[in-house]
Image (cartoon, rainbow, N blue to C red; front, side, top):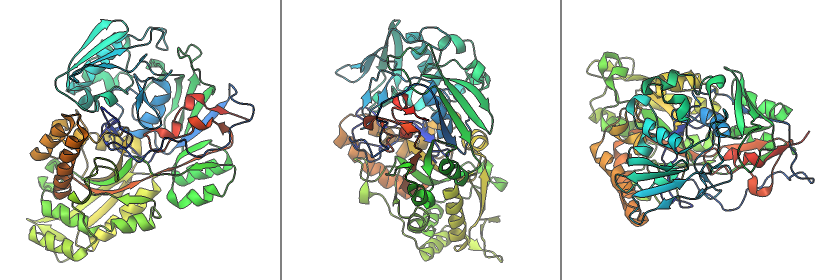
Length: 579
């Protein structure tokens, strides 16, 4: 689920998953197809959230804003972004064709590359996009239709390894009408396609001679000196493991210019260290305050805290590729085994005790109370160790002398990976370990540096089980890129190598009409099937409180919007800082 999901009509409360971003950076999210992956939409509001009072004398130019994170980037190339850390930084340096307003609607903003919303044919198969005529890359070259065409055509080449492939492989052709006009012709109706156009593009003149399989190694996206960009700020420095510096582009083409001269990202060891930096004034904003520290931050009257549910859900993901297990014996092959694990986990206890009640249980990959939520059609797994033991026995697991289950000579023991520095996941992993021990399953939690983990394990599908989340970048419920067998690594975000032919077809059915009632019926059936078969244990929706220090100012209509993916930086181009 990489990226942004709500498509066609990113109705206010419309759906859920599309390209998601796997997260664990300051957003605490997990995979996301652009993931990054991943998407149902979280509850939204048309009103700006409460915020610090803006300075009486209005915006001022200059100064530096300092953001924090506990995870470094993987790659800033828009073709390759599938994690929140990379997405956090990239959104400041790359302009998108379209953007989202506070309610999740697709709009052409002054900082968008497109001049107006696309012209859509009556049959929904043709989208014509008109670009602004003054847009430029940081090297002075004009941004044209050629760049859009190159981006789309390169994204759908499997060798590129782009999580965008599921956004654009329904495009039959993308044609240049003139330098500022691009026409997309679809193979079929694809309801979320309007959201697919909320996408940053890459410079054709820089990458055209690079083989798709070599793009990730080209330096574009990993070396500031080789990364030509299009946004209000330029990427000028990366000290790996320490932070990033973005400086305002004095030649930025947009009619709305940024007030803040410099953006600095500081990378901390963990969330607790981030919070201490915020309280001391060393950083200006933390995008994901741990629930255990929200009240402590709120106690500081100088810090504005915005706390509301977000478009994020946590999951325990299984790997179905036997090569990841000793003796090529896939531990999670049995459906009853997966259902047993679901019963063995005290999910409500996690919400009550770890999330302090700030969360909602989920049984399918659709956020609660959205139009695609299947409700009672999805199977709910209550916390019941006896039911879990019964299902495990039915699936052939027998306790050994050490109390750990075994089948066909293979002990039920697996490694559960999660990102280091994430205090919530550390606690949840410990609960999972204890809950499963009680039914005879041995779990070894393993914390790994986020950037290395995403690049070497998650994106490549080299793990046994993972604890991660999807940050949904738009309201559409399409999550084909995450769950369909068409999108195994590297050309997709189904990193667990899960295959269910019925679900494969249901995802297609769900986006092949723009009639919401018809789509709703499909997602109800999909919710029933996916919650029965369980490629994941769907844990809970949660939110991440945003804390902003007193130096940062914004007008009320430009305040952060937690219900959007990367909404903690909503309209940051209009923010300013004071001394």
